[in-house]
Image 1 (cartoon, rainbow, N blue to C red):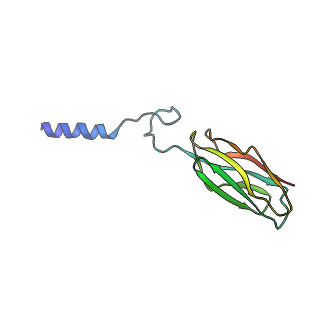
Image 2: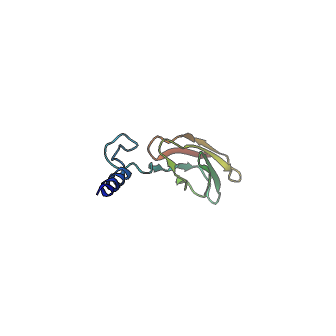
Image 3: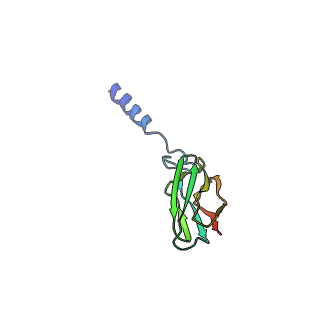
Amino acid sequence: MRAAILGAVILLGACGGGGGGYDGGGGGSGGALPTYSVGGMVSGLQGGKTLVLRNNSSTGSDDLTISANGPFTFASQLTYGMNSYSIVVATQPTGQTCTVANGSGTNAGSNITNVAVTCT
């Protein structure tokens, strides 16, 4: 009987408590932190040309080839509050120069959508 009680106490202890999540909310079991995307908009890229953007994030490099104006999103995700990002032009399109605005920062809990790449 004593062994059964001790076993039950050990099992209950292993379950852990509800604890708060990363945001201080009650309940839940914690778990993995959420991840968020990094992206933005390309403008001024001439038809038939491509450029390569590189996200030198704290999780490693992620290259993205772009061949049209419009929205873009890198494949790699950033973990809430832990990963930084730094977007640069790795390969310029032939005959054009592209610049990056709002290209670096640290993820603070939302998708990054304001990176602006302008080609002239």
